Length: 201
Image 1 (cartoon, rainbow, N blue to C red):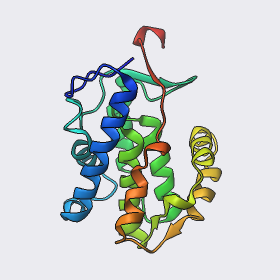
Image 2: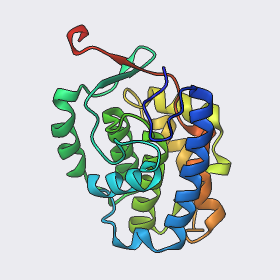
Image 3: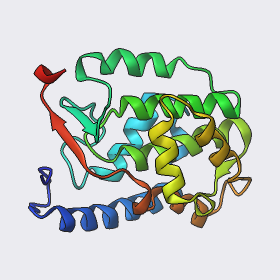
Image 4: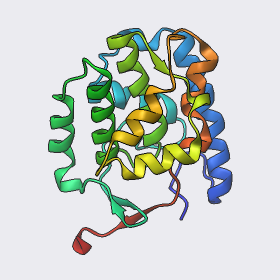
């Protein structure tokens, strides 16, 4: 199934390529133009603005909380009817330590507030929290893709794996463009989401 998009693309592979190209261009612009200076780290508003900036040329729903339920394999992300309260609770979570920041990141991943583009937006959001609170970011080139995806799948039950993986990839290169751009690497985001009806819950 190909998501409805502003580009008029009906082939999912073609859409993925176009989306990747545009989002990388937008991420580079965000890094260069001081966009992050105005954001309050750890807030949903910051995440929403990041998502909008990355995907507004591709999707009408950029920056907007999803209105459909989505699943990945057998895992169903937060149902729409509970999504807004979940986001409100996540915003209130502390973010003063590495563990607290990753726990907040994991909870936002479970919420999965957008129809598409959650992973890329949230990794930038994660790095913004780490940068503001700890003076660190993740060097995603040091994070194995398969290990990351598996750790994220397990994180709702046990977050020790994702914490270990990300802690070992921390760097103080917080103003390095190349390090930043790795956060939206196409290969790291989850694929294969499906829409399911509320009646099935």
